[in-house]
Image (tube, rainbow, N blue to C red; front, side, top):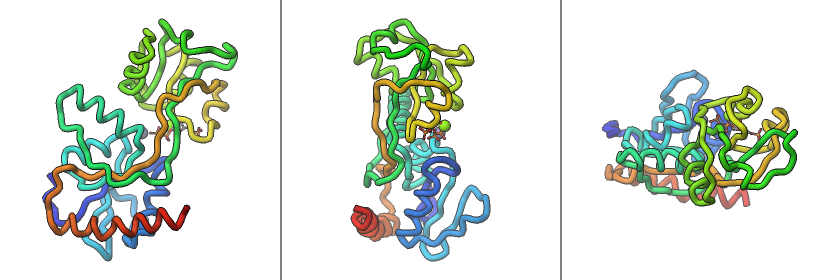
Length: 225
Ligand code: PRP
Ligand code: ZN
Ligand code: MG
């Protein structure tokens, strides 16, 4: 549990969501000195500490109460939730708000030279992905027998490297697929960033601070519409 009396928020250190997370905190009036490449940044005007970590670690940190809040892509949240549920460890969080950044889709893709393919082509194939839980559940629902190859990065080079027949990876602009000669197929999950809270958070001061920040968050979201 986070026993510190400062509200601890986990955000992605480097990656697609980092800039938007930092901008959001700024819009909420949280002043931070993020220039230093530190793991923890202390707010100078509110009892808030921002922990900058790998996005994959954010759901677990919030589920275990190491951090009170986290900003993470739904893709990562759903994957970690499924994995932890299978392991029988705490996997629940309170979803406070969907955020209007970090949109992406988790989609299947295969080498261009194969041309158009439908779902049945995946039968018996090997698919490289960072999201084996989400992919396995989808394959099961679709009744497709395919194996998954777990890669934490560089998924897009797996077919060319002979590690897999196809991939299942996040697509935002599509530039990565294109640069690697891959065709985008079926979307299996659509995702946005979201704000999550530890479901057992009881500290009255922290809850009061969250209650103060939430209307500001709604204000920021409405201003963008
Ligand atoms: C994803 C994905 C691709 C890239 C696709 O990585 O793995 O590398 O984004 O984006 P594009 O369609 O705009 O080219 P991301 O940085 O989101 O996640 P990661 O840092 O956890 O790998
Ligand atoms: Zn990641
Ligand atoms: Mg990537």
